[in-house]
Length: 503
Ligand code: NAD
Image (cartoon, rainbow, N blue to C red; front, side, top):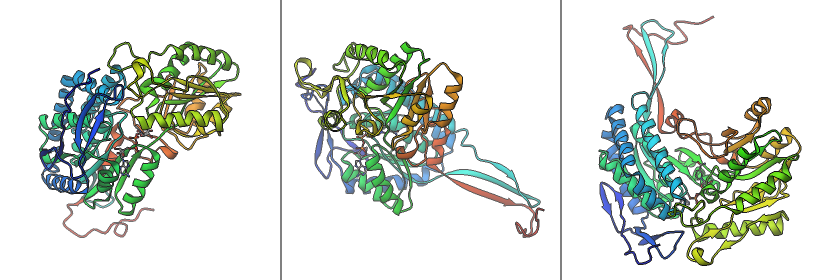
């Protein structure tokens, strides 16, 4: 890996200008597979820059909201086409920036492309209702209205896909944007903004403010002219944001943590279930909100399945994600690796679960300069143990044993979260029971817990969010307000509920 690259300077984009200096200095973005490689130096912004960005977005809103939605959507379609053109370059940089393997960063960009085409289609829909009115010569309809300036605060694990889930539909709906990406992935955010500008977006409609959550994130949440906060990240931060923004009656959409489980019944296709859990638990080094962090095995197949799982997980090739042979990259940062280590210690010492694979950081040879960690499996895990309850966000799988379907579903539901879930079974009755009784925003039948597509709602129940759904047309409910319009063409005063009474 490059060790001598000059430190490239990146800029924030505020009020239609690229800004290299932040009021709080700068911060470095480091390659987690090789910490000698500095991806770039970014401005650390603060409340001042947020204020300027919000003012620009507010000004731009007044003209952007009047651009016909199909025209706004054309720009988003252009952006999707540009993402296709630059897909490989963006994917390479994303791997360097946050570590996941190239297949996955290409998938991340593809999700942005899919979202772009889907959202641009909405420019010619944005459906409302027309309904009959109870009085003669009167017309009733509901229409979606834009809301204003939207603050988008995003995590590092999907550096392109998650920002596009928010920014593309918000713009199609006629809003303007102040975007704060995670400090681990600002380079991908710069790419996205460059692409939107090249696609024809009026510059002040998008503002990119790089910097920490405490200075930039809080300032966005608190600013009175930011009407919508769309946040994806941890449940802990999401709850704090909800409190602050809720006090100002802002619309807040929260996509938060998960503790997702895959159930394998005794009648399942074992090979398929094995492939599913390997991908679900160790893909993206376990750093997906939908990652499989619990595996619930029917008692009849438990021992044999665990044996095969260990055998296969041992063979996962760990390394730099830019190497096409690598199957699992590093964790995103030192802090993330420390967190994973801490949970392994909790699993061994506090929970007293049985560690049957991995559990250690990798620090020698090709791993000496990165945040690598072994694929890790615990068995004899009980539902109330901390490693079965708390989000770890790393390559750590907790295996639990279930007596039957009811027991498996009960165990699956026994967490504070409710994002993704999966069941492998050939029994159609069991599958339908699981679809009904699992408490989660997403359920896969005979597929792993990861793999969402943009045309279906994305989000979760319980501690995973506050009831909003990104992706699909449901995202429009985050970025628009309903307006009901009555047109009375009778030429006289007509009184609803008084001049005409049903019953
Ligand atoms: P995080 O909560 O630490 O940070 C998310 C974003 O919030 C970052 O941009 C961060 O800088 C910012 N932030 C931090 N403190 C803030 C504050 N006080 N005010 C405003 N903004 C603040 O999360 P992370 O470590 O970046 O991402 C991992 C978490 O995200 C996991 O919990 C994961 O499950 C979750 N996630 C959820 C989804 C989903 O759709 N449900 C998707 C991806 C990730």
